[in-house]
Length: 191
Image 1 (cartoon, helix red, strand yellow):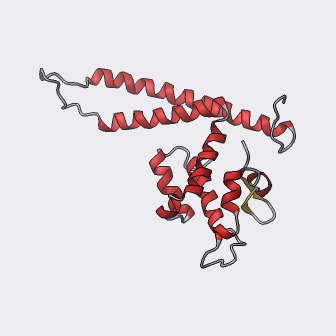
Image 2 (cartoon, one colour; image 1 turned 180 degrees about the horizontal axis):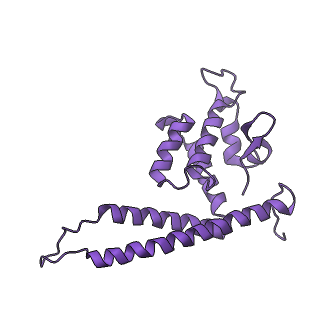
Image 3 (cartoon, helix red, strand yellow; image 1 turned 90 degrees about the horizontal axis):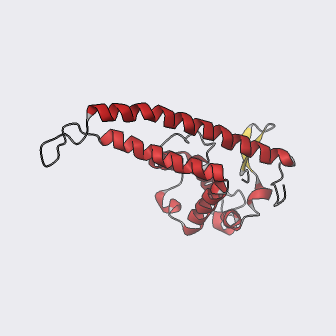
């Protein structure tokens, strides 16, 4: 996985890893000077729009995001707000292609892909528990949800979350090992 963001210890800020980012067509398109012209930067040299878009991508999609425990809708809303993107800018085809590419890169790892699937299942579990109604009855007047069954399901949830935490650690370790192969180099076919 390409690291789009690096921490600059001298400037004490997060910066875009331009050399790696610009190798990918979808991100190179975001970075084009013409596309970044705006009121605040009529030349487009400061890449203000691209920074907003990359910030959104990191906050909404990256597993390292501070919002990674949020539901996908909560991540989207928080990332939109923090990045300063409008809904219209979010719907931009070039930007959406970059989002899909970033998601694809994250899912290139089998562990990462499995982890994303499990996050999706946790979201569905949350919705399930949020919408349980013990007063709901079937055609015969019997409860659809039984307290005993729900308590058992709740007990199983802790095991599921523990398994996800273990998988997260495996994924982070995998990412660190890839990075350690050659400093910041990306592993090749035979690495």
